[in-house]
Image (cartoon, rainbow, N blue to C red; front, side):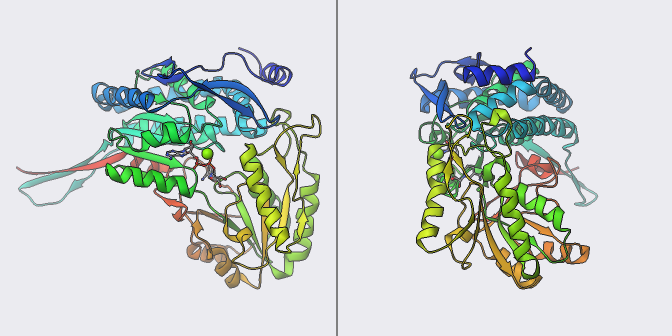
Amino acid sequence: MKTRKELIDQALTSGTLPDLPQGHFIDGAFSAPAAGRSMESQDPGRAEAFAEFARGDAADVEAAVASARNAFEAVWRDTPAAERGRILSRAAALIRENAAGLAVVECLDSGKPIGEAEGDVQGAARAFEYYAGACDKLQGDTFPIGPDYLGYSQHEPVGVAAQIIPWNFPISTAARGIAPALAAGCAVVAKPAEQTPFTALRLAEILKNAGLPAGVCNVVTGTGAEVGAPLAAHPGVDHITFTGSVATGTAVMKAAAENVTRVVLELGGKSPVVVLDDCDRDQALDGVMGAIFENAGQICSAGSRLIVERGLHDGFVEELCRRAEKLTLGHGLRNPQLGPVNSAEQLTRVSGFIARARERGIEVATGGGETVDPETGKGWFFQPTIVGARDAGDELVQQEIFGPVLTVQTAEDAEHALTLANNSQYALVAGIYTGDFTRAHRLARRLDAGQVYINEYFAGGIEVPFGGNKKSGFGREKGLEGLLSYCRTKSVAARI
Ligand code: NAI
Ligand code: MG
């Protein structure tokens, strides 16, 4: 096996990697797409294609769902929980053994800095480890329905669980859905984003090598229209976990409704970071920088709205601008502090927000332009950008930009900060920076968000349930609650 350095050097010099997975992963093996078509994956750091992959369609979805159904009914749902746990546990170990290779592929596919990709791979291993340990603790209840009765419940696997995965966290999102689905006893059909197909395929192969029976985890690659839509509409799918845009999530939910299929929707946000006068200033500065510039701001839970108390505002925003201007930019494989955005479309989308803001007469505090990797003159980069909001209704405050753009609002006091924070169609996460513990928890109680971070943005891991309110979606992933998404309760009441 090549070392991390050898893999990175090879990818930097050749612009690609050998031995990338070819085809879909269906019924325990790689297979060519029914229609024989392929499409290209782009390296955002160079704005050039680096590999081809299978462009699937409804026929491939059909084969994958049939394989999953068969594996679910014939093998997986009756595999003892402890054995499921052993397989997931081996998968976690194999992910760690293959971490360098997975991270380099993820970096080329998504553009993100290699250090962040490595963190995502470790996170994926943790997801399998966490749910491996949960398999044999998934126990039901008993009900006191009287001396002449016996009442109990058990958690049954839902069946075939589809995973529709976005491009911003390909391996993390795949793992946080696939691991609990398998732990619960479900079979999976995963559809990675067409921008980032490779790590999901690798993950399916790793699961097979860990001992997962053929057909329990399938991956079909291709576009949303050609693979995602038929998968979401398939009557043989019992559950859909979707992560992505509100528009596509709504379409998925409508398609699911036709079959009365369960859905978990994770649809992004415009998450506020509330910074109060009494905070630890350096801790807050570090937190706000990471909240918006990690993964070039392409995070559903990015802290994209800074709400800072007036007394702190001026110096705080100036210091943020100084730090933003010093961030190193470059190809992900050189591990810069800021990588490219994922696609030309995404770059245009981000640029559009700033161009329209300038037309409205809004001044950008720092950044605001498209740029390139200074070393190669290539890539889809956007400068780290900080911009003051004029009013709470402005699109800079209300719309998910999904790029390295921080919008700043000023609050008169904590109460005002809370009002500003909750004024959003989204409610995914919220951050609070304050030195007053009581104040922090009082605010946490009243913030409309699926999760609240206090004094460390993105605190927590696979143990903590994650998901949104309002247009950020519903249902929770991660934690034990994430496992229950893949279960249905069966209650039994007997006269004895
Ligand atoms: P998208 O929501 O269209 O794509 C997400 C996934 O859904 C991909 O796998 C895609 O192939 C699939 N998909 C697309 N159309 C589908 C359909 N009709 N049925 C089933 N699956 C379908 O997001 P897109 O176009 O890549 O990005 C647009 C915007 O969405 C971004 O600018 C960002 O604001 C937001 N977004 C939010 C994410 C999050 O983490 N919540 C992740 C990705 C994008
Ligand atoms: Mg798309």
